[in-house]
Every structure is written in structure tokens, then in C-alpha cells.
Length: 254
Length: 68
Figure 1 (cartoon, rainbow over the protein chains, first blue to last red):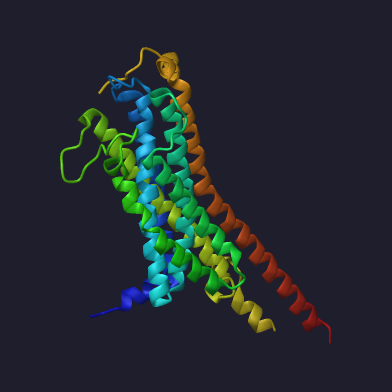
Figure 2 (figure 1 turned 90 degrees about the vertical axis):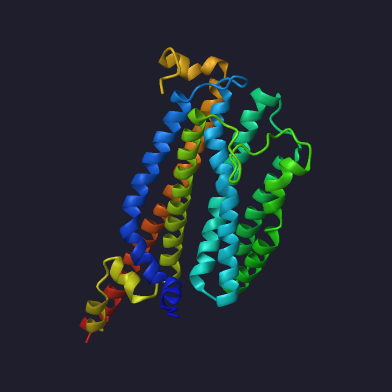
């Protein structure tokens, strides 16, 4: 079997050059889909018969929560790949995923709190789903803090990768929290195995936003990873050439 | 599919839920913008730094060349 693609994947230069072609398209589609989904959800989806218009927060809250969980898998897999194969690009991805994951978990928590006020009458309840999401937020912050805490890059990468893997135990708890405990938070609306408990007129804008957020996640992950690659590879010839510095001219003069 | 509100003012107020809904979307927009702009600014700042560094090196080696 040809494993060349796998090793190429680990090459920061290969990653940087391939994503340069992809970026304009990805940016355009991400922003377009997010815009369509937001306008649809805010103005064209019918109001909920129980919650009225406050339910429109779902079109932001659910995709953000989805991606804060899916993003944890991305971070954990990247950490595992880094630990097993010593692939330097994997640790860069892990670090980027931690920043984006923390921001999206924050968005899910704060939009949930704002939604909770008109619906449950309280900004915050110590409910199983919400508390486990708060733990997720702290896990992301922990990974970011550990990355900064060590002088040695290798130690920082290894320790935060191990924290990432240990924290994976929280993910099934979050998913199942609405079934295992009696909670204020409503059970899952979108289901893979059964019919979703939401009317199509609300489902389609929601799915549009979910797709938009997946694309946005990919876009942000690529942007952060590229910025980090440049910093780590700053002494290489390809980075110098890409920045428009004529390396050959410089070497011929000295 | 039709527009669900009587007027633009109705869309803004959302029968009393407007502040909650618009606050969420406002924060959402800030988070999305932050996650896109921060890496782009980091990148351009880094490229500026690198260019300056190479220019300094070139100037230094240039003065060595012309000295003797």
C-alpha cells in the first residue's frame, strides 16, 4: 500500500500550498451559507407555537454546540496522531482546534443562557447538559493554558495531547446527559436513526446553519493552522520565498 | 416560505423577544469574525516581521561587502 499521501499530509509546506488554492472558495461558500441560513432562520421560518420568536436562537445555538463537540474529536484525534506518529502538523492542528473549540463552546453557552431567560425564566441552571458543557469549556481552556505553560515545545505538545485524550470521556456524557438525568434542557431535536422532532420549515434552515458551521469550522481551522505553520517554519526557504524575499539573491551577495 | 413579520420594526422587536434573539446573533457574529480575523492578522503581522528581518540582514551583509 502506498503511504506517501499520509507522510505528505504531515508536511506543513504541502498543507500550506494545497490550502492556498482552496481558501477563496471555502471562504465564499461558508459566508454565503451562513448568511442564507441566518436570514432564513430569523425572518422566514415560522414562529414556534410555544416559545414564540425566542426559539430563533436555535439556529445559532445548536450548530455552535454541535461544532464544539465535533471540534473536540478533531482536537483529540490530532493529539493522538501527534503522540503516535510524532507528526508536527498534528500538534499545530490540535492547538488551533483548542482555540476554535473554546470560542464555539463559549458561544453555545452564552446563547443558551440568553435563550434560557425568556424560556425557563433563568440565565443559568446547574443542569446536567449545561454543567457538562461548562466542563468542556474548561477542558478547552486547559489545553490552551498547558500549551503556554512549558518552555519546551515537545513537553507542551505531549502534556496537552494527554489532557485532550483524557477529557474525551466528557463527550459521551454531554451527548447522553439529557437522557441519563432529568434535566431542564430539551432532548436532542435532530436524530440520525429516527425521524427528527422538528417541522421541515424549521429543519431546513437549521440544517443549512449546521452545514454552514461545519464549513466555518474547517475554514477557521485552516486559517489558524496556516498562521501557526508560518511561525514554526520561519527559517525555511519556502516561507522566505512566499513572503517575497529573494533568498538566492541574498546568498549570492554574501 | 414567506416573511414572518408585519414590518421591519416587528422583525426587530420580535414581539418582545427581540433583545434576546438579536443579542445572541450579535455575539455569534463577533465570535465568527474574531475566529476569522485573528489568524489573518497574525499571518500578515508575521510576514511584515520576516520581511523587515531579511531587509536588515541584507543591509548588514551589504555594508560588509562594501567596507573593504
